[in-house]
Length: 91
Image (cartoon, rainbow, N blue to C red):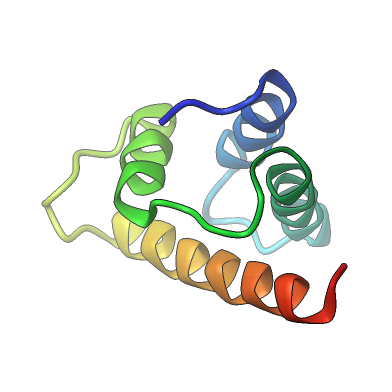
């Protein structure tokens, strides 16, 4: 998956966080990535490629059904919903 430099930076800022933390700043980084992604790439995302990219950043083996991989899937699903909302509302 090829991302703009800005989107890649935002993704790494978010994905490099402590995944056991529920700190508000972690969620803020996630939303910043989505905002940058929408600005740079629009409202559609290849979920499988993004999952692999995040797994690579976090050194998470794919296909192992571990807890971190499940969190990655959940976050991508939320991202898709947010992008759909942004598209429909014209934001």
